[in-house]
Length: 158
Image (cartoon, rainbow, N blue to C red; front, side):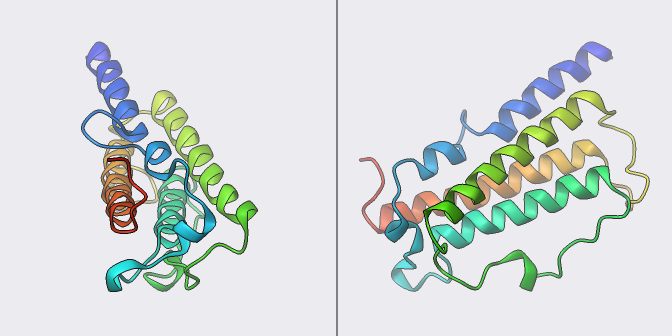
């Protein structure tokens, strides 16, 4: 069974990092400028910046929930979505992306060192396995939206 768990952890790491069946975040945001990440094309309700910030906030929340019984989640939906369509500056954009990457690496370390199947003590039946799948699913969904926006603004590879 231990071998099955290590196989599962390796597959989860691939899934969480993107690629394979879908584009990962790094590829989805490559070579974007601030003007592009700030656009809300075709009457869509969000920009690439807002999607990236939402990914950051939600992933951070799932990470903190997984490791800290005192963690208080942001208020849904208001505190999971930024109001601003654009980052304040390039530094804010870069900080969002590095936070997503840092938190993802921390979550991967968590699934490598903790039991995937044990219920999270302060949860309601959640396990690290469930949180890993939720992060992967949530991120893939919104990363796909980033790709769609890039296509709409003519900033995706042909």
